[in-house]
Amino acid sequence: MLIGLNAPKHFVKNLSIHNNERTHLMNKPMPSLIGHRGLPDLAPENTKSSVVTAAKHGIRWVEIDVTMAGDGSLVIMHDPDLRLFGQAETRLVDIGKSELSSIDAGSWFDSNFTGEPLLFLPELLDLVIGHNLGLNLEIKINPDIDMSLQVKAVYQCLSDFHITAENLLISSFDMAALVELRKLDQNIQIGALAQKIPDQTPSELAFIAPVSIHCDQEHLTQEQAAQLKEQYPLYCYTVNSAEKFAQLLSWGVSGIFCDRAHAEDMIAVLTHSSN
Image 1 (tube, rainbow, N blue to C red):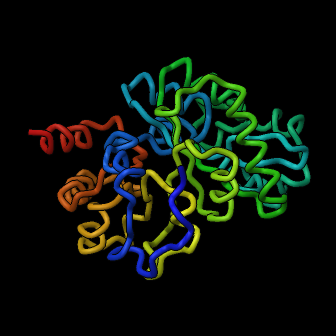
Image 2 (tube, rainbow, N blue to C red; image 1 turned 90 degrees about the horizontal axis):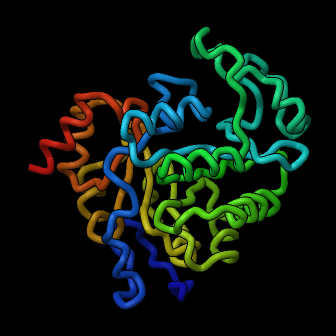
């Protein structure tokens, strides 16, 4: 059952939760240390190597980007063009899976990864299921393609795979995309993603019924964290400093997205905070 559509006006202080419907909210949907785009400290982001490397280092959850190419293919990439691979002028809307399959997605990172292929969503889902990973799938809406088409395609692909509900969380910066997703599925876990916690509550927030809030750690204040943690698990991106990680945990933040989630100093923060 969904929360009503009447959202409160102030995002932090006045978020209201229906006790009978949302008691599960305070259960953290993800662990405290999440691999950002796999493990990009050791392998090229959003690739098979990055996901597998994360799994080999004992990382339990990964955050991965998905977007759409011109032929409707769902490719694991952050940008709507090929800028990461030195082809910023090539837009995804103008190419399809055949062209994307020939892209070298690894040599920009290190010559040892030359020839690393791009992943597509079905391949990613096989990977995370095979390695028993939790997945925060971030839908990067391609601005050159209809938003609704993209959300429906992602949801259909997810529906074709046996990934347990507790091992999947969908997020996006596009609030309209999350509304579209919630219309398709009342039970799927959604994370509301914003660079900065807004002063005013997005009117759609209550409708999407998020299980968590995600924001940029650079814009979060201790006061905001203290207020928000009482109502939603809060996750911050992208945190690569052990000192910052420890500070955020002390503020009540539930977890972080990290490029070096395998690092001893990051893991030591978790050990210390649990003692």
